[in-house]
Length: 399
Image (tube, rainbow, N blue to C red; front, side, top):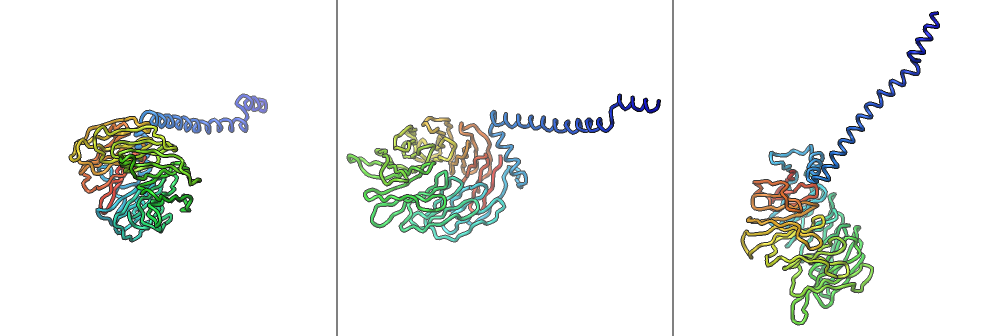
């Protein structure tokens, strides 16, 4: 009887050796289900932030990345200290800062550690950055330095005086220099510093040059006259051929800058922005409407930012963003002395004598900071943070 009772109880209550694992398995699944539910909710929140307010998502990302950074009450983290002067120029590379002046070229990381330090004798230091690298040189000198966020990548000693140097999105280098036997020479170097293309201009001076984003097409600006009228010519070459692939004539215009934009190029002139394809066809343009070009930044994600003055001098300005189709995205009137303008990603930073403002590309305000009189240059970063560089130190503004 006892055995039958035990067997009956064992049958109705279940075999402990079978039932126990089943109950434990259920308890293990519940935390997993909870974690999956939480992950789904967080993914939904992040997705909504990306779709509805990218700046809010960037702010969340900044708060995570720079969680340990010591910030003051304004949200600025003092990161970099260096020796510079009024000739100094700066570039932000993946958290590192490149500083070049008449006497020093340096790369510092966010812990203020010196990754590269070189004494130089520059008369007119220049610095340009793109593709995660920076190129530093002395206009009229012979040395060209290519740097990354880790330090020096390579150094070139050119045969003639360097007139201009620039990088494309892949880190390929274009150098314009004077050489004996010609008006100017343009040379292209790949990411490892190997020469891959060169052409020599025998009849016209070359003012500037740029390589396309895919590193296949070189565009160079030369100057001359056409029917007695001054003109700038943008000539195009394929880097695997020495034959001219196209030409665009800009009559009566001086080209201040030329850079790769999308699958083509953007030429900044004294009167307009010109968007050119790789064959030299002008696909779009944006005129300044009689205003005077004060500052320009073409590093935005698919757009350019311009500061246009209503008069040759004074503080009456207009801040404009322009898409690659030549259409004005947004415009805002300003009454301030602007000392620096920088675009990156979807953000635009504007520095005045004592104030920095950050906008999105539609010029909607994102953040603002007062009392920045020590800053001489602002470097916008794609994540919505901005480097405020002064003569001896730089801080990272984290809105």
